[in-house]
Length: 288
Image 1 (cartoon, rainbow, N blue to C red):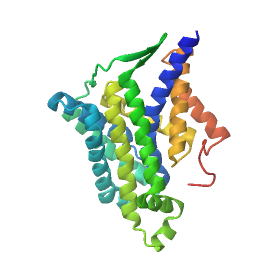
Image 2 (cartoon, helix red, strand yellow):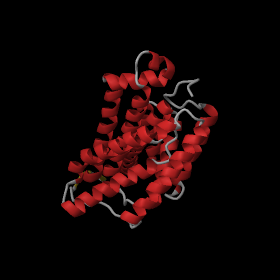
Image 3 (cartoon, rainbow, N blue to C red):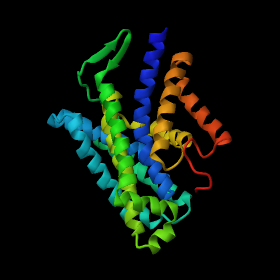
Image 4 (cartoon, rainbow, N blue to C red):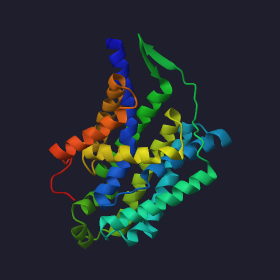
């Protein structure tokens, strides 16, 4: 029985690392720009499609494709924010929500035309490690480690770089940051680009673990919402903690109650935290 629960725990941690990587970019954009990007799930799937296409079409290893795919998504997000979203970023949140929803519909249908909705996945035979009855597939272990590494990289960028300090300053007080000479529109574009970069990295890793299809874009967006509520808005540690908590809840919930019930437990936990601790584990009270 202990080996069984150890396996469930390991599966939850691996799933939680991917959830954290999915949500950290979404949380950053929402926390800094006050923009709820409805495109985030589609960005993840687009990166997964690009990774699969690079693997099947050119034989590029998905680990080698991780950085180029993430950079492509970074540039896409940067110019999309600079050219379109920046024009309405100061408007009420419903305006930006409607705009990103419309853009998501365009991207969703373009992916259905270019890639079709047929699920696809990168299959690598990396073997596995066995610790008694506990099995660790090396492809999932590599995806977990890289997801944590990308999340850590974003944390380092925000904490230790000039751009990161500018992003934090804009988040705390946009008008004061502008008076100090910070070019707020450029910082917004860079923030959105970093958010889509993380979505791109996660999509490349997700293609190693789960079939990629446009049918799951809404599910991925829902996971990002839940992680943001659990961990708190706009913080990398919050996204990491929220992702791991959600992964463990779904893993143990799926074991105890069945896989069809596991997603409901995540939403139930989100509603509970909204009632008890709306700021999440690492959020700050009074921030909007």
